[in-house]
Amino acid sequence: MTAKSPLQAALQGKCPRCRKGDMFEYPLQKITKFYKMHENCPHCGHRFEVEPGYFYGAMYVSYALSVGIFLVTAFILYFLAGDPPLETYIISVVVVALVLYPLNFRFSRILFAHVFGGIKYDPSK
Image 1 (cartoon, rainbow, N blue to C red):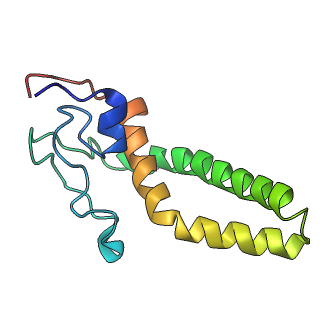
Image 2: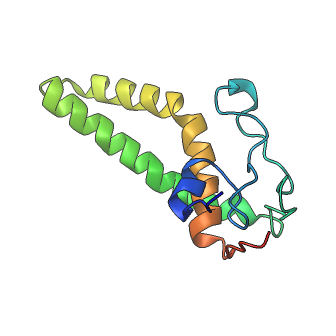
C-alpha cells in the first residue's frame, strides 16, 4: 500500500503522523457526534491534543474558513440573484454557515494539525 499524500490524509481526516488512523471517532454524517475526536491515533498512538489548549489555534483556521464561506455565499447571491436586499444576504450567510458548521469544525482542526501543528510525518508508524 502506498503512503497517502499530505493532501489526501488531510481531506480524509487522517492522523498527521502516520496518515492512517482517523482523527475523529465518527463519520461526518453522524451529525450528533461530529465533534468527537480520538484522544490518540487508533493506528500509531499519537496524542492529538499535544498540550492543553492545543486546538485553540484551530479557531484562526476556522475563522479563515468562515470568511471564505461568507464571501462565496455573498458572491453567489450577488451574481445569481441580482444583488438582493441586505436581509437576504444576512439570512443566507447565517443559514449556509450553520449548515456547514460541522465541516468547518472538523477541517479547521484537521488543517491546524496538519499544517500548523508541527507534527512530522513518520512513515515507520
